[in-house]
Length: 587
Image 1: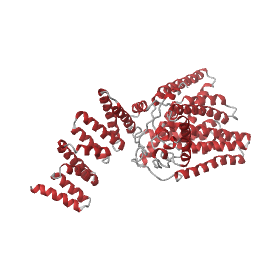
Image 2: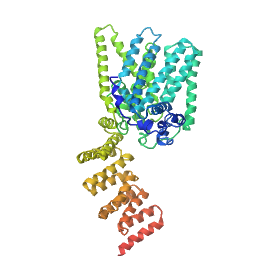
Image 3: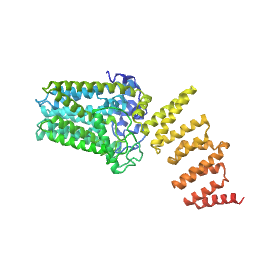
Image 4: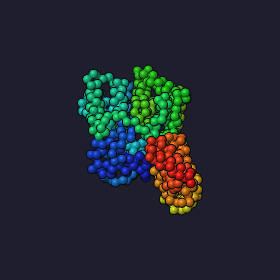
């Protein structure tokens, strides 16, 4: 309550509009649950299945809870945040119970202390803030909650030999799968746990496997019915849905290795925090750089240590292998997740790092050496104070869109998306504010962040659109046509299809006093850039035709159009504009 109490007054932010406020299925309340269970999870927002991410997404359970919320209380973020915090609290209790069960037969460790300290560290870990404070993060909380419950009940079955517990475990695992695909990693984590911490007969192993296999088969059948395929082969070409789209295979693997090192760092030292890891907050990496190599070496060492520790320190083996297994599905190594990394992707894996930290602290404290005991207490105090302090500082960032974006650009300074969102927020404030000085300040701030976004990633279409829009608004204040056209040129040379750009150019064409400057601009972008430099002849013709409408007898424009249409193999237009150019020359 100390850390997450303030979230009750927070707004819906970020992807909450996709899963709640602008999701048509969720907004139908009870009547939308049938659609939620039988369609791809983004369909309610986009109106139809878009396949914008590899394998699509099928996570109906959290969406169903949102639909129920909407039926009961409408679009009230207070209830949404309250439920997230309560589910998180239940996750903490479930982790505590899980570790107790894992260590139940191990007399050499103080299982209550390890379980309690692990749950406490998990509770205060700042890397969980995104999953808890963002309503959309409920799928992360639910998948862990139900996966751990499935683990608990499979252990009950193994130790008490009561088949009803295996049935309960299967049902709970099915709910975990419906929450999020991450639950698939527990197909390995649960058997690993049984193998390490119990002595199980072959018959019981059969029941354990069946308890996992049956709900998985049903889940994939439902997924296939909803999505139309199991994995799919679509490869997104938008860099905001596939940040590796312009990388070589070597660069991709090195960048993934780098992000895995960042995940390790955040698991122990979660600072600074941000919600935006889009291009290029994480830079493109190569294998001749230190972090990808160091990351690969560390993960190999972790695996080797886990295998060597399996008899003497089973809790270390379990923690390391659980971390590695649960990270596979969010690492981008096997399936694309749409971004380089995200803090919420650590939510499930952090159960392992929390256990490791707790075990390490207790291992230091229980030594006979008094200095080591003091060291253990000091380390515990340092972690507690540090994690809670980071949490108290970070949670308020999620209050609304402005506070979230403002915090992001301080950390994700090189993210095109973070800068665009901050700029767009200022632009919205510019449009809604009435006081002249405040409007000007908001517009200047919008221009700053949007220009930076465009500079980082010029081909980012949303940035191009906003760059052109802000330039048009600035033009209303300074009436500097050359500045406006220079901005339009930079936008058009990268994203010539930007709709607003063409709308505004048609508007400028209606002002006769601008004709001379506009004709020069159209020739520069149409002939020099689109035709000569980029060989994008259709766009060259389109821009040059704008100039022709201003002055149909301009010789330079007509000659350029004849060249463009000749390259397009359109002889009739070629001859027409060539003749017009010659007629002007003869005059």
